Image (cartoon, rainbow, N blue to C red):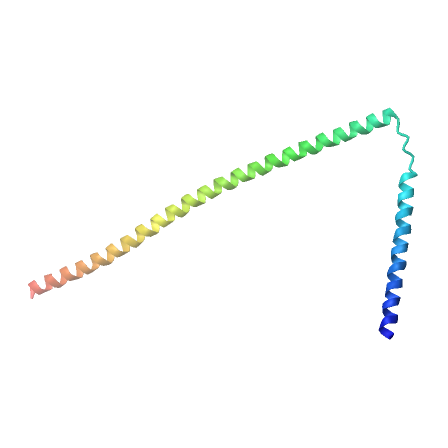
Length: 123
């Protein structure tokens, strides 16, 4: 029974909130429609020109940003290509160093065996 009383109180609070919101909405609606809309032809023309000017400025700025973006994309693409070339060169150099190290080890073994052969003949 106590729970039902609390629920009824909440419902009443919500309904009062809706009623206040409805009244505020009606007030705003009436205020909007009470605005004097007696624009002259000159006023409309001035407004249209201002809108066109603002629209052209916005389009110019958009084109400018697009050009900057395109330039950055080109620079990024060039850097990516250079990076790939450097990576390929590094991989090739690393492979050459590895091959040279293997060859060096092989040559050291051959030299050691030749020295042992020479020592055997001297003795």
